[in-house]
Image (cartoon, rainbow, N blue to C red; front, side, top):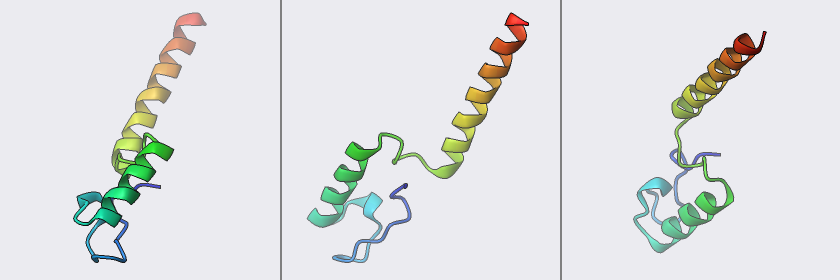
Length: 63
Protein backbone atom coordinates (compact mmCIF):
# COMPACT_ATOMS: atom_id res chain seq x y z
CA UNK A 1 0.00 0.00 0.00
CA UNK A 2 1.25 3.45 -0.77
CA UNK A 3 0.88 6.10 1.87
CA UNK A 4 0.41 9.04 -0.49
CA UNK A 5 -3.38 8.75 -0.10
CA UNK A 6 -3.55 7.99 3.62
CA UNK A 7 -4.90 10.69 5.94
CA UNK A 8 -3.74 10.94 9.53
CA UNK A 9 -6.47 10.66 12.16
CA UNK A 10 -4.42 12.83 14.51
CA UNK A 11 -3.93 15.95 12.38
CA UNK A 12 -6.14 15.26 9.30
CA UNK A 13 -3.21 15.87 6.95
CA UNK A 14 -1.79 13.43 4.39
CA UNK A 15 0.59 10.96 6.05
CA UNK A 16 3.11 11.56 3.25
CA UNK A 17 3.59 15.17 4.47
CA UNK A 18 4.54 14.04 7.99
CA UNK A 19 3.13 17.09 9.81
CA UNK A 20 2.77 15.48 13.25
CA UNK A 21 4.72 12.81 15.16
CA UNK A 22 2.00 10.23 14.43
CA UNK A 23 2.30 10.88 10.67
CA UNK A 24 6.07 10.64 10.76
CA UNK A 25 5.99 7.40 12.76
CA UNK A 26 3.48 5.77 10.44
CA UNK A 27 5.34 6.94 7.34
CA UNK A 28 8.59 5.50 8.71
CA UNK A 29 6.88 2.21 9.61
CA UNK A 30 5.39 1.88 6.13
CA UNK A 31 8.75 2.63 4.51
CA UNK A 32 10.43 -0.07 6.60
CA UNK A 33 7.77 -2.66 5.79
CA UNK A 34 7.82 -2.08 2.05
CA UNK A 35 10.58 -0.15 0.27
CA UNK A 36 8.24 0.48 -2.70
CA UNK A 37 5.55 2.10 -0.55
CA UNK A 38 6.79 5.58 -1.31
CA UNK A 39 6.28 5.15 -5.04
CA UNK A 40 3.04 6.27 -6.54
CA UNK A 41 0.98 3.79 -8.58
CA UNK A 42 2.10 5.24 -11.93
CA UNK A 43 5.75 4.78 -11.00
CA UNK A 44 5.05 1.17 -10.05
CA UNK A 45 3.33 0.58 -13.40
CA UNK A 46 6.27 2.15 -15.24
CA UNK A 47 8.71 -0.04 -13.31
CA UNK A 48 6.67 -3.12 -14.15
CA UNK A 49 6.63 -2.14 -17.85
CA UNK A 50 10.42 -1.75 -17.86
CA UNK A 51 10.86 -5.15 -16.23
CA UNK A 52 8.55 -6.82 -18.76
CA UNK A 53 10.42 -5.15 -21.63
CA UNK A 54 13.76 -6.35 -20.22
CA UNK A 55 12.39 -9.87 -19.85
CA UNK A 56 11.12 -9.82 -23.44
CA UNK A 57 14.51 -8.61 -24.66
CA UNK A 58 16.34 -11.39 -22.81
CA UNK A 59 13.88 -13.98 -24.14
CA UNK A 60 14.39 -12.67 -27.68
CA UNK A 61 18.19 -12.77 -27.33
CA UNK A 62 18.20 -16.42 -26.18
CA UNK A 63 15.75 -17.66 -28.84
